[in-house]
Amino acid sequence: MNRLRGGNQDEQRAAAGEIRLLAKRNVNNRICIAEAGAIPLLVNLLSSSDPRTQEHAVTALLNLSIHENNKASIVDSNAIPKIVEVLKTGSMEARENAAATLFSLSVVDENKVTIGAAGAIPPLINLLCDGSPRGKKDAATAIFNLCIYQGNKVRAVKAGIITHLMNFLVDPTGGMIDEALTLLSILAGNQEGKSVITQSEPMPPLVEVIKTGSPRNRENAAAILWSLCSADAEQTLAAKAAGGEDALKELSETGTDRAKRKASSLLELMRQSEEA
Image 1 (cartoon, one colour):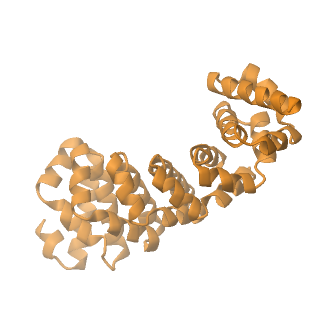
Image 2 (cartoon, one colour):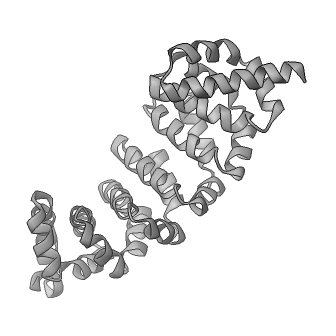
Image 3 (cartoon, rainbow, N blue to C red):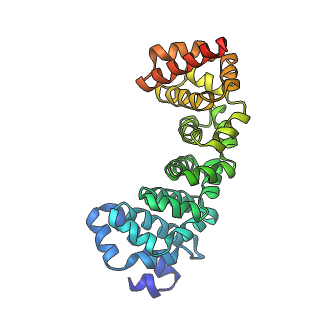
């Protein structure tokens, strides 16, 4: 601990690296490291000018946060604004692990509010777009968890996430279709989110997923369609024009239980729109 607190840069880097490895190994280590007072010292090292020290510090905090009681100690040490700063300016590895740490901390509901208010969502969206494959997945998971809180849905929509998600949806080589649909399904339940999705011509790609996607993706696409169409006759007609009726008939027979229910409800909407 003395090397973490008062060592030179090399000593701090080595000490943070050792704690990172120890905290990765087992629960007892996570408890002992926290009880020895390491968490505030690691939080201070998040501001280190040495990229490797910063990587070790954020990853050590990620590993420590796996133990439930340590989550509160990390937040109480004012870590969240510093983790957000690492997410904005760190190396790719540091950004990935900052996103994963925010996800871990956001399991506690009140932290969802704090993390969103600290400005985490725009840099998470940047990582979602320009990160390594692992960084993109970590960002998507963190954003999804944060958006369980309504206020963060609004932040994500205002930060322009939907344009990026719609781009993922039509890029079969990007490997992000699953994440895009999962995020769109939670954002479509929000009024601002629904409005922006509606403006981005969503029907052709969503109907394509219902025709050709995995069972989970077909289910999410049907849930998004339901959110868009249930109170909007124009969107119902757009879904029909994109070939939605045949795709939904098949889904109502072959989909998951939830997908079958959504498909049947959507087909009923389409029938009503013909009668209107």
